[in-house]
Each structure stands twice: as structure tokens, then as C-alpha cells.
Image (cartoon, rainbow, N blue to C red; front, side, top):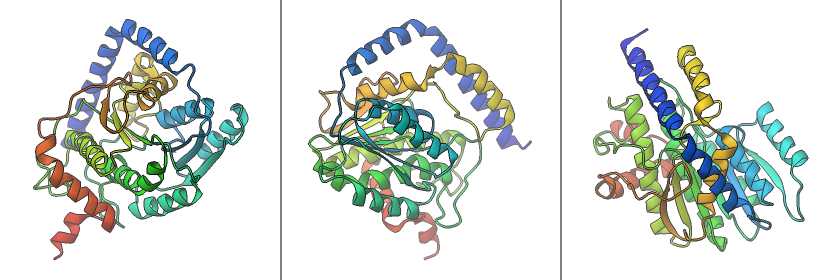
Length: 340
């Protein structure tokens, strides 16, 4: 095992153990918080509204999609077509007592490739109702200790494409439908308020020139999500944009990790919140009546937190322009510049 992987395993293990300790220490807070979230959501009725959930075939995304459906919201799930996606769609149609006009759709998408995201956005816009899209929820992601891993087609790192570029492409591409809604809302579930700033954003914005590490990838993804959603809120003041941190959740997170870490994760997940409880928290934040328009950060309980990084305002213009150029060209900007 090389030094990079050994260091990554140690770092990941330490993070997981710390997460378990924090969660175990706050059991009473968690219990009272979930009761409050369920009370806030109990009478939620979303009949006539339409949600698009990217990453809705598993984990937190699936739980949010199911919770929205149980509140009478029409749901379009976006993800890879597989046995898992068929099971999710069958479950929605079988287990949800649909109201008049409520529908469930699936649109396939390989979110590792911006070209496929662009096609998917077109398909979703074409099939969305005249009243537009009321909720866009994005949870697509991966947990690995791999180094910089660009796609052959577009030259962009896999992890950053899932966590940043595909989310930016969905959010910006679906803005016309979100603006048709009386109260359009966008939620990106990743790491609000818990990441550090990525300081090398000017010299190596795509982490392709030697800056890549597990920490740098995590920090840049959260940092860029803050900037992306804040910038979009300026473009579309009518739409509300939320970046949330889900906390430690009992899902299939880490399936791409080495066996040792996977076993550690599964053991520690007894301390984590269920994906269903996480969905209650996220839905409380997404539908909060006092959050209309603008950019909002949500903690693991779906409550607003004021924290952005110290470099947020300084980096915002540069980072957003770079992300825009990536989603406009559909490929690595740094790779293009190096060939000029």
C-alpha cells in the first residue's frame, strides 16, 4: 500500500471515529431535534408541486424523494438506470397513496459526464409541467480515497464532477423551470458550514496541477458549492438556494472505500441518524417559510447556520466564472488552456 493510500486511510478513520464520538455525545439533542422536525413537517402538503431529485435512487436522495412523495409532491428522480432505480420507482408507485395529478418519473443520467447532464437537463425541461419545477434536490456523490481521476471524455475529476460541476449544470440549466414556480427552491446536500476554504483556487481551480488530496477535494467541493449557490441566487433572486450538511447518516456511503474503512463505517453507523430522519431535517430546511429567495446554509438539523468561509467573498467572482466556463464548454478549462 503506497503512502498516499495509507495516509488517506488514517485520515478517513480518524474522521469517522470523531464523527461517531460527536454523534454519541449528542444523542439527546438528536432525539429532541427529530421530534421538532417531524412536528414541523407533519402537516406538510405539497399537492400540485413538482420536485426533481438528482441522486434519488439511493441513500439520502432516495429518502428525500420518498418523503416528498408522501407529502403529495410529484417527483422526478434522476440517476443511473439500474435494478436499484427500478426498485425505487416501483416502491414509489406501490407504497405512496397518490393524489390527483401526482406523478412519479425517472430520467436516466450519468452525472460523471457533463455531456449527459446537459442532455438530462433538456429531457427534464421538456417533461416538466407548465407551472415549472418547485424543488431541485441534489445529493449525487461518491466517497473514495482515490487521487485525481479525470474522465477520458472531459478531463474533469470524477469526485468534483459529481459534487460541483454536475450540480452547477443542473441548477443553472433548470433555472427557467424553477423561475416559473411561485416559490422555486434548490437544495445541494454536501458540507455546508463544516468545510475549510480551498486556498489554491486561482492557481489550480480544478485540482489537476498537483493540489489534489482527499482534504483538498472535500474542502474545494464545499467551498465551490457555497460560491455556486450564492452566485446563482444573484442571477435569480426569486429562487431560494440552500447548501446543507447532512451530518453522519446511516447509508451505503463508502462502498468505493477499501475493505477496512467500509467495515469501520458499517460498525459506526449504529451511531448515525437514519436516512429517513435525515430527510425530515432536510425537508424542514427546504420548505422553511421564512427562507424565501437568496442563499442559505443549513446544518444537519435543517436549521440555518451563518457560517461561510473567510475566503468566500474574495474568491466568489473567480471561482464562479471558472465553474460557468466548465459547464458551458462541458470539459476541463485547465486542460484546454494548457493546449493553447
